[in-house]
Image (cartoon, rainbow, N blue to C red):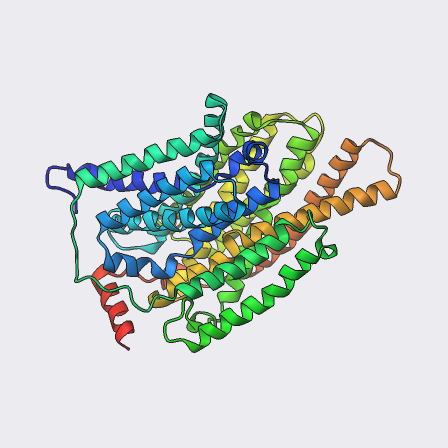
Length: 497
């Protein structure tokens, strides 16, 4: 699809760059919430919910991705994705309506993944000529996970440089224009098979599953604000959740081509995999509730100081994903042992923070725990996705990715953040009721350490269970990537049947 005059050596690197730029983009950026609260007149929970719409939007295109690829050309998909992201960034700077901001964030996340997938699907044989998922998946997670702290760091640096949160949006518009310009001038339309029409796509199923996720996220995002069960609105959303879920599941079981095929759910190890994803998210969510409380409420650090953490997060994510490739290819070790290594690093973050937390803590003490947490999370994230690929056949694998995303993309993080905030408040109230001597800062510090201690105990129990569970390595049965022509024939055959 590249024009003949473009040097072959730079072609895959351009697509790798495009994928990274797509991952930097979004409709609303987490790191800018503090600046946006004052200017837009919205609450912190409102902007967190807007950002969660984007996270959910990233998870939902998986069942549609190959259908898009079989209908449109690479050139069309990338230009359209970049154009829509530009429009979303422009609109999010001037719109103050909360529902519209949520919709914009969802759309931006949806096309963010579409653009990223299209880039990686074109260089998959360049990443792994042997079509080895054990190399391909961890490699793309170097970009996907590494882009998260990179986007937050760039956003905060833009605020420091310009004094306005809108600068990040203008920067992303410029970067997406760069992608459009490169695609428009360097490539041409090219197809590997006759285009397949966009029929039998369950758009309503996609929206219903999105609604289920967003209702769960809403309950735990606004739980502390509404004091949980005390608010009529919170109880109303809680009552709507089982109704929405029942409608979604009932529709899934009675239509010909559902968004999530019912065949995905009966796999014996799917639920344990989802449980492991949830445990990893629980261990990885402590910085959003406990560490931020420590740095902001006790140490009184601003975002310019804490932005240094993003650099070590980037280092941890990239090296953790690279270590997964190294474990799989040269070492040929069991993935269960690799999971144990990853979870041990997540546990070490909790242990170090439990002993480090104090009013005299300097910023250098945070660097090692931050690196260990992200290093372990990247290992865990990549390895569990490989397990999922080994268990699920290709026709339903991308649906299984969406199912796992119900845990990974926003739901688990919101649940954990809400529960951590509730637990922290209960610890503070308990300390005050028992008449513990000290000011509020000291009581807050004791409560944070107690919460870290609880996570240390939970993590230790889970780690011991993982060390006792050692099974045949996935690498002995790992399937290879399918050629795109074969994928197209399988999808075409499924539509005919």
